[in-house]
Figure (cartoon, rainbow, N blue to C red):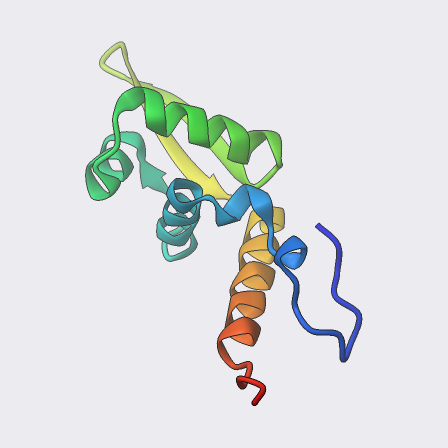
Length: 108
């Protein structure tokens, strides 16, 4: 994602396309408020199917925004997710750019 030069208006290309997709934005928003979120909890909060959640998590992981942790409890896999530092910075930049768009005054 390109950075906007100071004084230049925010353009659609300035938004992070990985985060901006609505499901991924929801996932990152939930993760931003917590240190770690369990798979079943995240799926339930966002009311996603297993496949939908897995696909979006893969995109976020590939971008380096989300880390997946797998542990075993009673021979069952427990999966949790957390935002990486890179993911937190990307989310913060994305939110700041959205805020800049919201604060624009209409030209007359």
